Image (cartoon, rainbow, N blue to C red; front, side):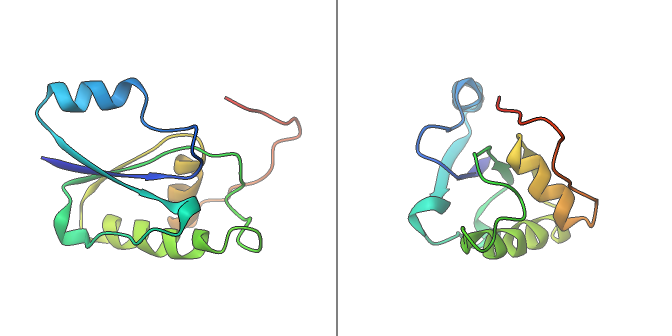
Length: 110
């Protein structure tokens, strides 16, 4: 199984999830969105993990790649590929699925 993940900041990778996937003989690849790396073909992956980040789901003015990423996530979902979202990743998935994603009254990290 080939798992691709989207990373939004240099200091937030897969963590222990990487060890679990490797132990299951999964192959891994990633796109560092903050470095404007190219996204893979959706035909080359079996699952997608969308990691966290300090930006907000609606911060496309500051992070132009968010719009491209949302289109990619939507394509992956439409193709029936499994997607897991962590923190910001869950918000991006929710936004793509037209769920309301709003700012919390209190700042939350972690």
